Length: 177
Image (cartoon, rainbow, N blue to C red; front, side, top):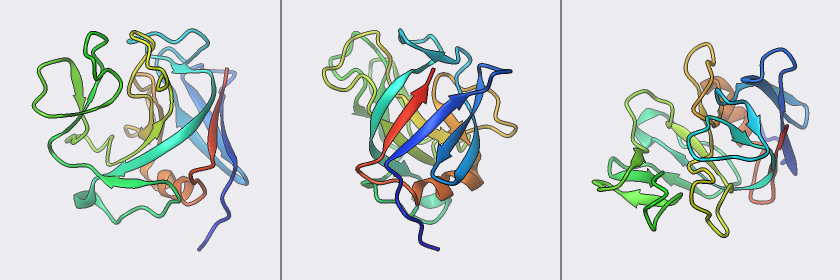
């Protein structure tokens, strides 16, 4: 089924638990989890919070060995075993993709736990990149039961594909704090 694209998806924090929320994309409402730090207006590396604000969605990544290619209007790239993301503020490649092995602190994009089977890259701290302001801010899959993430917005696997069908290069994500 083809869905119309939405211009803005909004993430609202739960009034009961600052680590949980909901995503609203047109008429689609999806439960989500936020980081253990909830939503922050002064985001810092390692604080476990999602930054408040309105951001572009840059691209999506997916594990081709773990399911069909997602349907989306975003640029889409398959994750490979040698893909990483720098989260080391002292690295000149901070908050950017890096090839593995990598001598500085980083995240592996190819994970055993399925969290990055589908990932949307959110344009937080990207132009210009400011050290210690936070890296690897993604919309990705959550663990069963949606416990808090390390600072990203996470959803259940069944929901991310429904959301991806509704977003494209002109869609913005608004994190309401």
